[in-house]
Image (cartoon, rainbow, N blue to C red; front, side, top):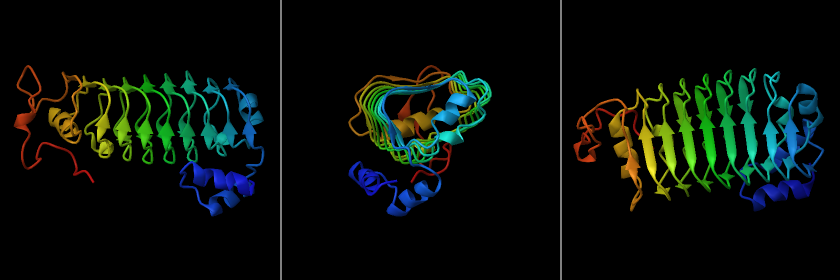
Length: 258
């Protein structure tokens, strides 16, 4: 990759080092930025985009026979939307050096997907939806700083690990709904600003006090709050959420936040 490519990382606040750029070159990341939209519907199309470091438009992956997307390992930036939808065989989504998505991020109906690694992603310009991924157990985007729209995490039955740790600001609503295995909200430890409403409901393993703890880390939050059908605990009166009942010692909560 060129020296200017490395400098671009610094300008955009990426955490990739100059050594990382050299490593990219060793792995064939030499094709630069693709101008336009990219749609991947089969393995041959996936292979044809190997080596690109960016996409100016949308990236859409709807590839029923793709089990992984290693061919996109060089990708650092997508100017538009990212859509990963209806990939029946996709088992993991590792976009570990992607740091910028200018539009929305939509992860939808990928039944075999168990792990999503977006751990260098810094910003998403619009909304985020992670929905109906029946096998998804881990979603990690620990360097994410800001999300420019609504965030919806719903109907992911096996989701146990939700890590958006450094995400300080969500500009829209936050909905965490119908994730049966989710037991805590520790992975949202960095969230301090929510621009819209909060709805945390129908997560059968999630204690209501986790919702209260999340509300407590949002100073000045004035949005609407909805929370029903989570795991009953001292923060649930039997008909409504009551955060004044939050145990002082945190005994009903998960592990301590950072």
